[in-house]
Length: 267
Image (cartoon, rainbow, N blue to C red):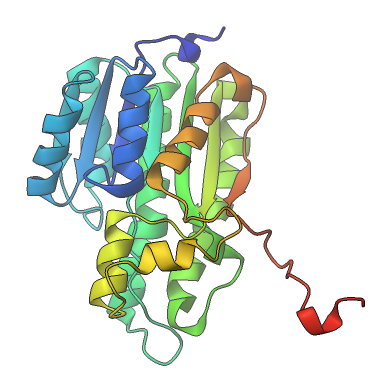
C-alpha cells in the first residue's frame, strides 16, 4: 500500500459548502482522512458545512473567490500550515451561468473560464508542489458531460469544461512518475443544491422537478452528490492506484448513443 493510501490523509476541497464538494469532503472524512480544508466563496454556508463535518473529523476552512488569482497558492499554503501535508485535491467549485454565441460577454467568458479552467489548473499546480514532497497524491476535477458538446445557451460553459479535461489529461502525464494521479469526472445531471436553485429560480421549474425528471431516467432517479462521492472514494483508494488521466463519464446514458425511436423498432 502506497503512502497516500493510508488513513490520516489530508484533502483540500473547493466548492465545499454544498453539492459535490460537500459530499466529497464528507466521504473522505468517513474514510478516515486526518483532515480536510474546505474552500468556498460563501463564508456563511462554509461555516455551516464545517460545523456539520466537524463531527466526523478535523476540518479547517478558507473563504475566497476562485477568480482571485492568488487564492490557489493561499489555499495550499493554508492546508500545509494547518495539517503539514496535502494528499488529495478535489476541484469541485464551478460556474454554470448560461450564455452562448449571441450573448456571452467578455466578462462572462472570463468568469466561466476563470472558475472552471484557470482556477483548478493553478490549484493543481500548487497542490503538486506539496504532493511531490511525499511523492504521492490524487487530484480529482469535477467536469461535465457537456464537455463533449453542450446546448447553445451553455456553449461557453461547455468549452470551459472541455478545457479542464485537456488540462487534466496533460497534467496527469506530467506528474505520473511523481506518484501523483489526476482524474476528471464528467458529471451528468446531478440533483444538487445549486442545481435546484438554478432550476427553480432561473428556469422557473416546480419544486419537485428532480423527482419528475428522475422518474424518466434509466435508474428511475437523478444522480445525487452522494453518488458522485462514491466514485471519489474509489479514485482515492488502492483499487485505482494503477490508473491516471482518466476522464470518467458519470451519467446514466452513454454519450452520443441514442435510444431507438419506437417507429424504427422491428415488428
